[in-house]
Length: 221
Ligand SMILES: [Zn+2]
Image (tube, rainbow, N blue to C red; front, side, top):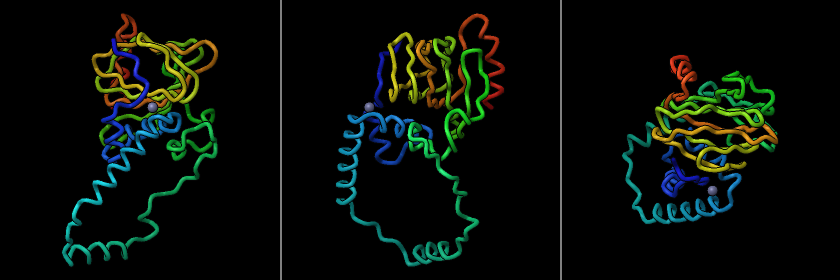
């Protein structure tokens, strides 16, 4: 059983500060940072250290040919080359980093039923294959005992849930590895919405729910 940890490890924050995290993990850190003053302060310190290190580095010299190629490629950019700008959500209860995926509010998303207790909606796929989705667990609902074929990152956006390791509330961040088997259960008072990043399909471990595994794997491909 894993210990209840509700903040990203220092190494993850350092990688976030250096801009070296995959998009999917960076979204989870960003969503957590909007709730967590202590991690925001740690990140500010890491950013300061990073910028001091950068200033001590000698600038690398670039050849004239490289500079010319860069300027030519900028000149040839047209409006069609720029990514399509979607209107950003103005719902202040949604983390800013997710506004690009959510036009209005959570209620207007195309939720799909996963089980009688859970609905999900996929926000995007990372280039490393990780799935970025929102999960909605009904009040008192259970996410069925499961493990993962890859790491699972979760940030609670609304409500709260508990599992074998503890109780998690809005803004809490957690990572579950492949060896962690857990059964999240939403608290009774309200539904729970989580940002979830899975690097491999979920594996259900209960007797009957094991029959779901082939379906889930097909859905993940
Ligand atoms: Zn934190």
